[in-house]
Length: 256
Image (cartoon, rainbow, N blue to C red; front, side, top):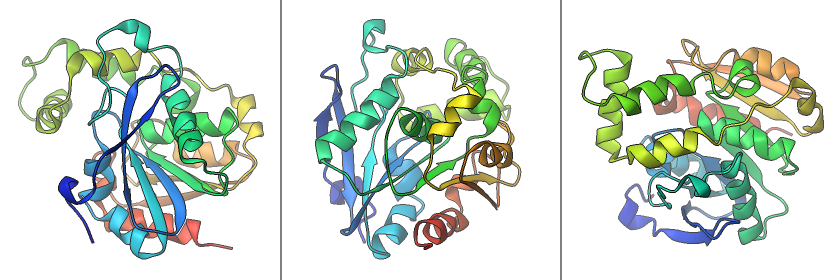
């Protein structure tokens, strides 16, 4: 199964504002869109650790977008290209571009928040997965953003081994664009608790046992009409590397 970018040719679609946005695909079968987290890319979150390959082997057409300001998608430095909730707009544009009507949807961290925003705004997958995201991170979308603002505005100033230093190191490894990544932080919107009532399909909220970065995923599951909670090993950074993550996704997606 392909595990390198060269084996998964990049494709492009247009955001609703015309931005050039990237995605890749792996496998054939039931469509499954998986959205990566902040600072990361589709290749790092979903391909590097084998999750996409396991899902593809189980009969899924795994669709892997790069969020705006990430990976091979547009990285504009113009604030006009970052309206509120633009990542949700982009996700809905991808569904429309692919002509999907019967599909599944999921994401990790910022990708998890984007997934739930898509559901609140009318996306209708059969099932959805919100991983690495808790209730607090949906009700107060800007809370965790202050940490990343501090990182991006003070690059090169952090003590080795600190959380900020580790985030900066990851940014360097990914080759992220600090200006574009700062811009995307301004697009986050809060989701009022009452909006969760619109989400009728089964939703798995999944988090690492030691992940407290975005509040409680268990409380988020309880706030949804048909939420189910599963815990996997790790913290916010490490849970996405664990094989238990793909296993939990498959168990949920394949359930009757």
